[in-house]
Image (cartoon, rainbow, N blue to C red; front, side, top):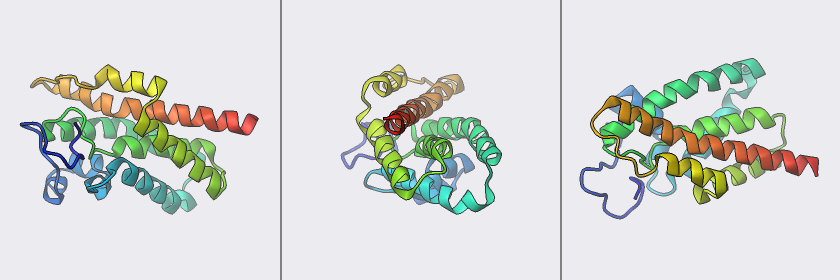
Amino acid sequence: MSASDSSPLPPGFMRPTGRFMLAHPAHLIALGFGSGLSPKAPGTVGTLWAWLVFWVLQPWMSEARWGLLIALSLPLGWWACSVTARHLRNPDPGNIVWDEVIAFWLVLWLVMPASFYDQLLAFILFRYFDAVKPGPVRWADRLYHGMDPGHTRHGWAKAGWGILFDDLVAAFCTLLCLALWKTI
């Protein structure tokens, strides 16, 4: 059960709040600057936030700048997701959306230039792969899902990587489908 479900949380798990988000820079990043606090579909809201930020930054970004931003966002996101998951006492909280942000930025960066409808198709495909988790995405999610990170930073670092990994695989699957679509 993820922290974003409306049902009661398992014992020891916490639901993030605005106060929690602002208590640590890692929380602010991992919760997608507030988009992960959405009570409904935080992953979708986080992906929409990523798309909006991509559009806002696009006039100032070059291919190299996007590549650098994404490359720097990965270790930063790993740290932020690890710290936030540990503070929420949940190895895979649904409210952590930085994984969606990085993965969708990667998709948009690699498909641009693209029309609005191509970007919309990328959004729909990415959300499908992230939410339904078919095939390789399910495999990536199961590598880390349900793990007990224990009380060590190493265990929580593994959980943080697990949060990111399945979304990166979902991005790869999205890009593969888009490439096949353009080829056909």
